[in-house]
Length: 89
Length: 223
Image (cartoon, rainbow over all chains, first blue to last red; front, side, top):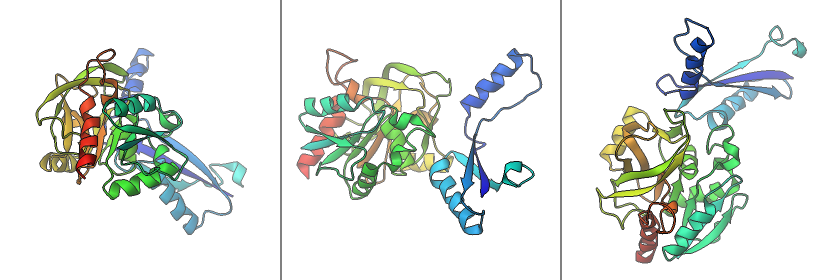
């Protein structure tokens, strides 16, 4: 079993109104010094079996077709190590 | 002339779209998201609403509905397809239209009578208008801000593929005030405002929206 994380973020040039709303709320709560907030999504996929190259290629395909919209978002795929996720050990 | 209107789980404006087709003189045909079947219709409308609860991204799940496989194939073959609001989002997610629609820059849901200028009166859905004509229809969206990269925007401008533009202020932060675009062939049109809510004097801001439906019917009669 392997756990794979797909992070999806709005592209840098795309306006992120949600991130701006969060950024606007921070000073009102007394948190200073945050010059930008970008809000994205994190998907955790639990794979049957190991994260082989072939399986990871599939995850990339999932990320590019469904999990993200390449017109407005970038994605990043990484396998969680056993140190990050002790339940996998 | 039979115009299909797809109902997805979460569609809101399918009945209004069917009514608009009927008022324009066509026969509306209900299509179901779960069927691989367009029931032999001559054109398709993807209506507004919140298909699949707008989970993941607006239109992202609907794009993979069984009926969309048929819509995408038929659209590539020239079938007139109009996507309104959520339908526009689905067409972008399906890559039948370029760009994407993101949250309004002011972060509020807008609901208003909106003036738009018809920029291209030669698509399958706009021939009964004149280029440059200003019409008033209904705009209601939370994620209606049209975005695309500069190259794509220039391409759309150069090829006359911007179908409609907002007039009198940009209501949602759309790049270049774009309210609607079309594909290269002009048979697929995506529109953020709602013409189907402006087809009768009794309710809505008038009947300016009727032209989209009568245009499709006229195009079908010619072919």
